[in-house]
Length: 283
Image 1 (cartoon, helix red, strand yellow):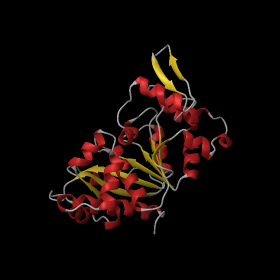
Image 2 (cartoon, helix red, strand yellow):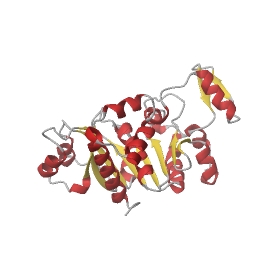
Image 3 (cartoon, one colour):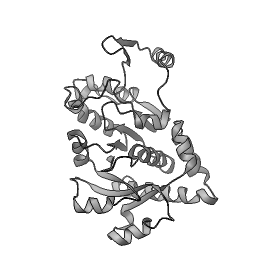
């Protein structure tokens, strides 16, 4: 099951919203989840779980722990690890993408249940999605999908051919919308091509605003089951900066939050369950 997060608007926070919903999915249900960036070297998604770049000594230490060498590319003076997406893209046969190989090239977010596929270490260039190795990305995604119940793919606000292909093939497309913009109207005026169902997600949501979830459902005649929201939460955004989204969501869902943050928990649980029910992975 592939669920793609995408937005026609820049700054809609697709990576953030995906990370929050993916973590909530694992907390709420006995699912195995993979999160994957829809770009070549876009590390925004990875940073939601592990923070910003580690210093080079730490990277070298990690490589040594896994019996890998750190290679210096003289042309760019950058360091590359021989694992992650770059390693999987080098596999020439589908048979080489075994569960052990795929998971060993991912980073574990929740033990045995949630993994993140690190982006490529190289630089992204204008025609990155036409790279002779990246054409194998579809095969990599198919392999990842076969080992997990759900694969969440962050397409950001990309409009390149690869992002279009992901959106056309995804079982569910979560369209991320900023509350104060006319994103839903824009969608209906010029619908993108999706194979599967579409779900509208309001990020940085404020229920006190004029265009709240209930009013938008009424204005655009959207089914209640197709519109979700992730309320703005200052503590969650602080956790994002430190790469601790998983810990905050886990605490919110497992222990419950009372008072002013209760709306956040309620809307997050509702939204996550609606997306998973639409996908058919939960009843």
